[in-house]
Image (cartoon, rainbow, N blue to C red):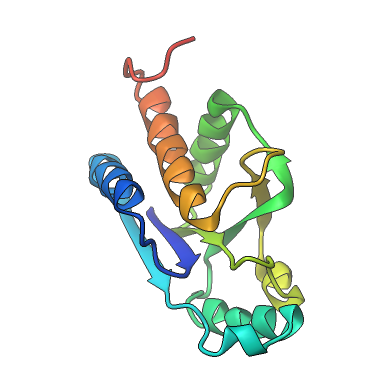
Length: 157
């Protein structure tokens, strides 16, 4: 199974870039993994929230392939413990999904068209994080999930 993390916008903080690279490298030991950043919309300061979400949805939807299992990282999604996330990931991998796509939207979330294509929504916390920080937090949790599934000592209970 391939795993893709789609994210709107570029990461520009050096400390986040360093952490993201660290976990992307580690994930390569467990799965075929790709992080794809979709450039921010041009002239977004002159757009309404809805216009921005619509423009981003066009870019996101063009990345989806038939058969993708799409998970939106969304504040209204299901929250998992690290162990429960690992168990969920194991079930998805065993189901025969060819490509698992996690999506981090723009600052205003997702347009209805993107919600309509999603198979699931997941929330990392009740707290709000910057979209750049979410990348690092999610990648660490994905790495943690694989280490749990492999019985490695990274995760402590």
